[in-house]
Image 1 (cartoon, helix red, strand yellow):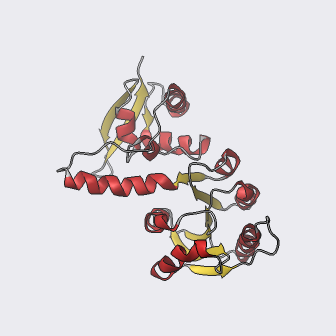
Image 2 (tube, rainbow, N blue to C red):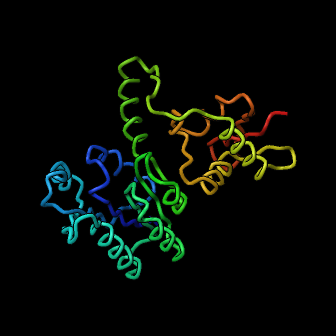
Image 3 (cartoon, helix red, strand yellow):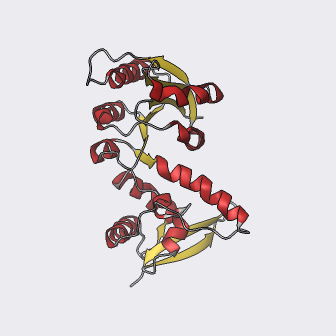
Length: 246
């Protein structure tokens, strides 16, 4: 059964240039049955959004700023989210914003048993990130698209990504501990389980943040881990296992 998602976008807080990659990313997690974007459409800074709304079937919600210095858009988005929650028409929410004001909303939606995906820029405050089940930096979506284009132009050679994070000792320790948490008696852990637990521990953990499209090549690049490919008797696919080196 397909997961239905409500996609709520803070138009004041997210650049329109990322819309194509963002909607493609959201489609990986479910069917966006509700797509709304909030903002004061009388303001000139939202003009660029107007050009892409019809192409992506996103419903613009007009919200005037009643008082200078106060963000009425946030309030409208929160109220709508709660209405959608009580209608019980979706299985999860995708909150697109870099604003920490949505931290309590994300927490409340998860308390109600809904899956919450956050999408925002790298400047997003930590409280909002950890309030989500998964948080995706919007910059890596644009980088991924550019890199795939550049790779094609260079005959399949992947180019060095810009704006990627370094794999620090702290990241290595996080992966190592997570492997230990789900490993069998011989120290081997199914990589799918490792990835799931990493996401629970750190909602913004994503191999793309470090320049890798998948977790497997990222693990391969770190010399502190062993990787083993095993044949699955029930299917033609191979299963990837990983363990810490002694």
